Picture 1 (cartoon, rainbow, N blue to C red):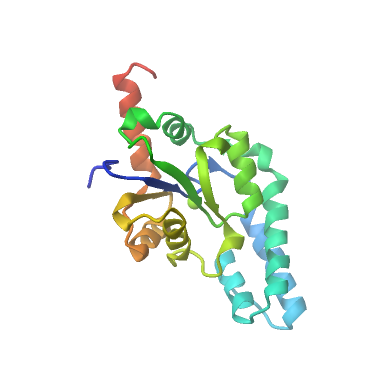
Picture 2: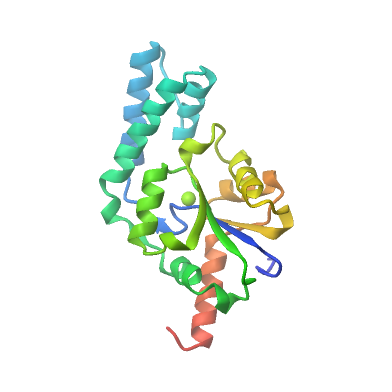
Length: 206
Ligand SMILES: [Mg+2]
C-alpha cells in the first residue's frame, strides 16, 4: 500500500458522508420518494440502484427545473436528521491540525460530495470546521456524479493547481475511481484515520 504523502500537496479534497461525518439519512426512504415522483411526473417507471442514477434520468431529460425539485427533496431529507449525524473524529482532528502532518503552509481544503450544499455547510458548522474550507462542490454544482471526475476538475480549476498538487479522500471505492478518472491521487479515509491514530499515539494524545 502506498503511504500517504502530503509533500507539495496544495489542495486536500474531502468527501463528506462517511469521510468527515456519518449522516443519519434514510437513503432507502429517499430513493422511494424520488422514484415515486419520477413516475408521477414522467409517467414512466424509474428503476435505479443509486440516487445518482435516478438524477441521471432527469438530467438526460434536460429538465433543469425538475432537477432542482429533486435536489430540494434530497436537501430536505438530508437536513431532517442533520443534528443526529456523527462526527468522524480522526478526520476532524486532521483538519484542525494540518501542520502536524507536514502539509505545506499554503495548503487549502475543499469538499467534493454528492450531498446537497446545505447539508454540507451545516455538517461543517456542526463539526466547527467550516472556516477551514475554501471551496465546496456539492450535488447541485455538477450534472455528472461520481465516479465522473467533473467535481474534482472544477476544484482544480478554481484553485488553478496541477493534478499532482491535489489529494482526495473518500470512504468508498467509487471515490477512488473518481480520483483515478480525474488523474488525482486518492485514498480511503481509513488510511488517513490510521495515520492520525499513529500520530496521536506517538504524541501520547490518545
Ligand atoms: Mg461518502
